[in-house]
Picture 1 (cartoon, rainbow, N blue to C red):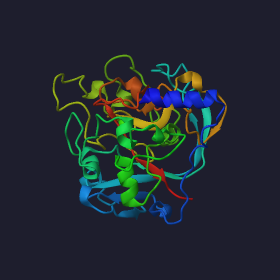
Picture 2: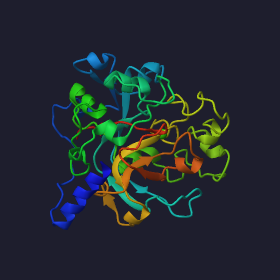
Picture 3: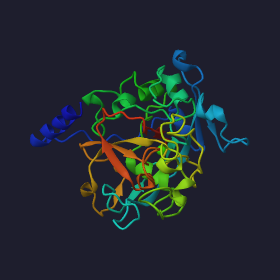
Picture 4: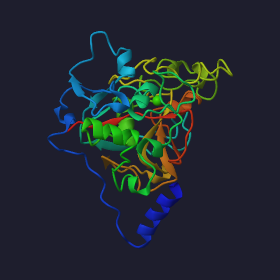
Length: 336
Ligand SMILES: [Ca+2]
């Protein structure tokens, strides 16, 4: 599939045919996301696969008793992120630098959007799709062993950024249909990193740098996410009770987002190209290259070191690729 998509993009370029303009946010006044002045968007998935629709509601603040288990199972909560400018990427002297990070450059996010407070969990995925693909089971653990194509649809017609269409039967497609929120999708990686950093400029969104990044545990990373050496496989080998952790088990960032570091890698919309595809020029609402060697994954996982979990860390995998450390986080427009 990846080969077909790349070949199509290359052919268009050879023929001098411009690809379709990048999709823009849906600004329809009837979208439930448009009352998006609220801080949180909540989707009620409790009706499961038989539901005709999933009710959408809004919260101005976190509930008094916090994000209880229902927000990790039968409900799905997203947090509003306001526009702003940040520095995407990192310099080559950042501790833990591993080669694919973006050249530091200013990125301006001009549109308000929502992004999942948590990674999508296995119960949420099951309620929407009726399937349970994950290798390491747990309702409140992140769904994993899913490809980019599985989440959005397996066809060249769903080739972001030429199109923002998705397969109607995919997780994203079903959510769009049953909520009326037509902008549901994976985040772009620029939005992902903006949300991950939450105003920080360091390797980690707790404002710290790694201090022991080549082997073993790193005390700076331990508080913000699950990775190999703080009880992924690293401390109890051959135990399936290790791997990833229930979402929300570590410290959130300043915007209240959990597990942006570690637990599972998170698929983003963009095609992946290495550091060489970036320069220091400022960008506004970037949507990524028109083709690449894979789709972007961000944030590291339970099966890798703390270096993978840094805010700037990135990798690319074929959109057909599946692994028990690949998951995702949902995003949508917040209206304007
Ligand atoms: Ca993660």
